[in-house]
Length: 214
Ligand code: ATP
Ligand code: MG
Image (cartoon, rainbow, N blue to C red; front, side, top):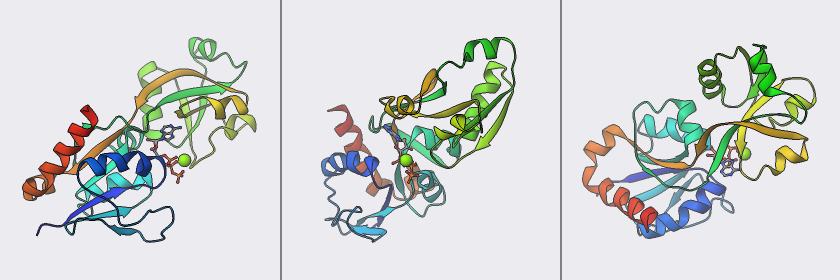
């Protein structure tokens, strides 16, 4: 029997993936929220789940420690996607990657006069590519969370972060001024596994694709 390992992160991606797993006939044996286990069995003896940080999913799949994974486009763009096949946009965990500034900061004017901007973000690579494309000079400041704080305490002029409702920005007197890209989660597959475990992986990939289209 071919063993299949699927890498998932806890929280919204796990929750929104459950119905897709069900459509593929896969039911986790326990919830990663209540269990401390990092390897979770399923109703299928040939399928197991591993629970990793969202930003680590591409790494596990790239190296073949997982055959499949589910990761946000934000994470995939930042990782680079090397060694990964991305067959299905699952249309879950949707939000937007945005540039945001304090209310009252004239971003358009700063860009026009060629100001050098201090940009705080978890997405350093994505931000670098975005601002280079606009011809804007930036000093990138790598953060691991709570990006909204940076402009409030003088660490940065602008942030690059994910926005869904805008509630967190508003609560911190920030405003989104530019969209970088729309974000949703993708199914990612290890390219070598796709060849070697074709017969086992195909039905799972197809079931996910069908469930998304339904
Ligand atoms: P941690 O919170 O443990 O530091 P994380 O921030 O990467 O990790 P989540 O906040 O659960 O984990 O985000 C996981 C993925 O969900 C992100 O990579 C992104 O694709 C998506 N996501 C993040 N924020 C939102 C949001 N506000 N709305 C919809 N999807 C989101
Ligand atoms: Mg988070």
